[in-house]
Length: 354
Image (cartoon, rainbow, N blue to C red):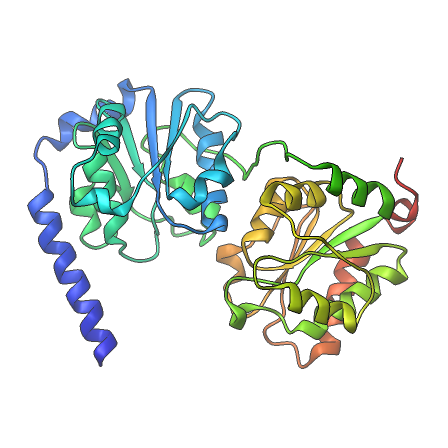
């Protein structure tokens, strides 16, 4: 009951603010869709995966438009140096309610431009809509037709009914700007380091196995990853088990029951460099999964209690596996092993790296 009251009050507050910040002359601003060549995409979520899921929009627009991204400060490192990006700007949520030089600069950037609110298409998300409206006060704001947010949009875009995929739905937000927008996740050329290069060159044929994830309840059971490292070893491939902040013990637990080597602490670029040259990457549905796909690595992603059709990347050479209903760890390992067997050219993978 308490949760329902909180949701009701949040939506009520959203409608009140949206009506207060509503601006007339929508049709006049909508004309910018065909005349403006500057697009400012707003995505202020602080998660790595969410930042990477914004990159297809940049790819879809960069050949015809000047594209800028406005992101959470924690995500600037993810998108810095992204191909096709004209500008990367950070936004602090506190600027929404008080003036600042940075907000004034963003408003100037968005004057007579198209501002895309790349927020959730599934449910109402108030803050991104307010931020987009605040930045695009003299521009045309495009975004999801969700709840009170659609009042703040000059052009509200309804969700596609033929897909739930995050990349496809986010690209659909660009349909008022370009016809049939297409794009894929991408990342800069990874900025490797001598330590990572030495690890790559000394390991031979290897796979990256990343057993972690931001939400523990969405991780596949640890013994599955131990079994995967053994299955890789049987194919002549060394598992390099990577880990993020607070996950070193988890990585060591995987290796205690499996085979392979423990990766050193890695930055985002170092992890990307390891993934880019791996024979395959095996991971949970988490930020590293999106990073693996973005750098073009062959990815086997393991889903646990999450909608695979929404968050997965079900296209070659990637394999998305939903293990939620498997009867036990052995059955899960067998499914992953089958996916690896079908994905890898084992003979070529076993050859020493030149």
